[in-house]
Length: 539
Image (tube, rainbow, N blue to C red; front, side, top):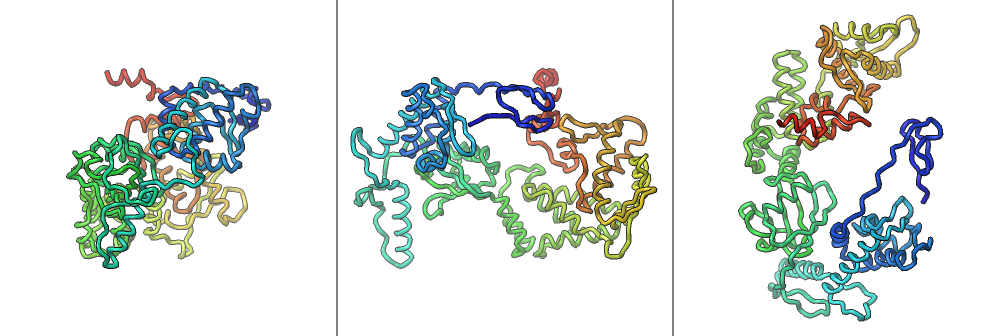
């Protein structure tokens, strides 16, 4: 596995032995070596693996290197295409992470070890310990000959038995005794000693699942907080179903009870449903009136502006949607078209407030969907063969554009844009329009009294300078809007903190805002993210 690094300036691939690009002379920052994992970290990673075949494969790779130091064939590369490696390590969640802790490097095709004895010893000890735990939990004995056939999991057998009993009940057969078959085909007792920790699988709404290992004495409220940390779904919007069939629900009145007391078992599958998203799905289905949707609003203990019922009522009021209406989005589009056609500034303020509430209600939806809603409601006059002509002087690009854009009215800006350059012949078939928006952003960066470039190369308002800055920002905003209307991109991106202001999206935490500031700073560190600055600010 040959290692190399890519130059950030000219993208040339250089050897790892060199820290200077051979083409442009750019200095590569030498990455700090990864810290050696502690024994506790190794044990936590290995404890997630309960596949005995995976544990044996990992232990073989680690032990071979320790028993044969210096032999290259054991260091790798170990091909992922090997059937045993692929089935026991690549396809098993968490197995590759154990190799990383043991000092193995990974690429798309293979694993290779650096021969770090300390890492290998710690991982070897954790693997042997976990192998013993797994063997004891499955009833294996030291020195016994293992069967080549896989042993069935008790939880799977219990689910099969429950499904058979459920189908028999539907056919009218009498209920079977509450027992499940054991490994040998005999009836296994239903009551068993609950383990100290439960291995749970959480199926999330967006698809996929998350493996969890949590103490059985954990309270339901603490478990909901952990689900919030993993998925972002608020506790009062969580509906957790379990059992087989998944008919049992973790109820709010049992938040003070433990997971063991509510009936969760080891190996349980929990299905997480987001009540807020289910409400929005019913709202968009067109099967319920707005009055009926008020009865389906999910519980919201908080009374703030993010409360679902408050946001829903505010949207209904802002867009004057009737209580008997079925088509939610049709009513909003119809109201938007009326506002835009009347061209009344006072009504636009009301629409802007309504759109903000709509954004908060559909906060998980793609921003482009909300933008398409607005663009689809605009009275665009392209079919009337009207055109908005801009004649630009290249020698004074920004000034000539600003003068013409500022004099446009709203009706003119909604027509098709045609670009021409003074003293140049040409027909704008779309290429000049795209070039205009890209060139405008580049010329914006030259106006230092209006915009500054971040370390990442994004544009951020200066918020100061000479008089008339407000008028010039209005011109820039109009050009941004016309770029969206024509489906064109600007030549420079806008900074993330500035985009938050435009979209009215507040950061969820100070750390999130600091991460965006550091991102825009590029290779530098934003002074607002330094620890000493925050300490002085707190004082």
